[in-house]
Image 1 (tube, one colour):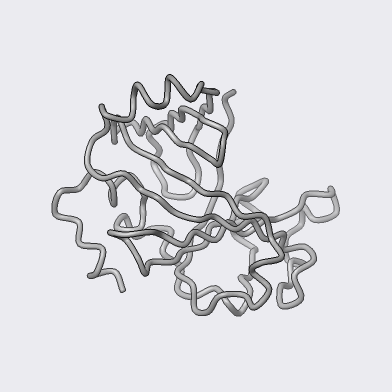
Image 2 (cartoon, rainbow, N blue to C red; image 1 turned 180 degrees about the horizontal axis):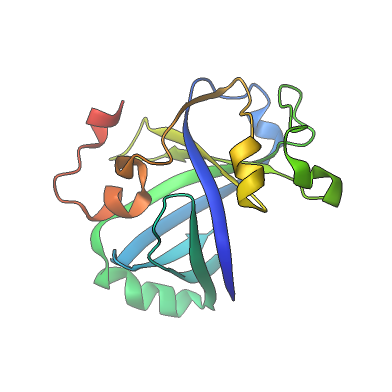
Amino acid sequence: MNNIEIEKKWRVKELPEDLDNYEMIEMEQAYLNEHPTVRIRRENDDYVLTYKGISDNDIAHSEYNLPLTKEAFEHMLPKHDGRIIRKKRYVIPLNDHADTDISSVSDKADGYCLKAELDIFDEPFAPLIVVEVEFPSMDAADSFIPPVWFGEEVTHDIRFKNAVMAIDPDFNPKAML
């Protein structure tokens, strides 16, 4: 499926207190190529191959997601470049989160539910924690006011791109803290 993914990313100032109340996904992902990005990922018991198109900006890019079998994932995994990323992702609906005001997001009236995807990385990237939000439009991304538990925005900092973290041999996860 082809679509445009519009997302922003932040460091996390503090974890939400009610984290255990949200869906948690165990992820394992590896990169087969960086430019353009070709990634394989396990999300609990689901597997996917992702192709991300090259973009002029850090917020929006084309993305194709294709389902994989477990066998295909396991066949491709040894062919990865760099490090394998393992993390826990918590999916937190922002429309109903107590400390989030999404009134600035004009698409709210259309029934769109903004979700924070909170990633807690395993070694060698621990204790890195980041949060991403996907938006239905550039206007929604531009007008979004993040909740108080979000920290510094790092959307334009390439060091926080998973592909860079995995593939760059000079990447130092501890330097990001």
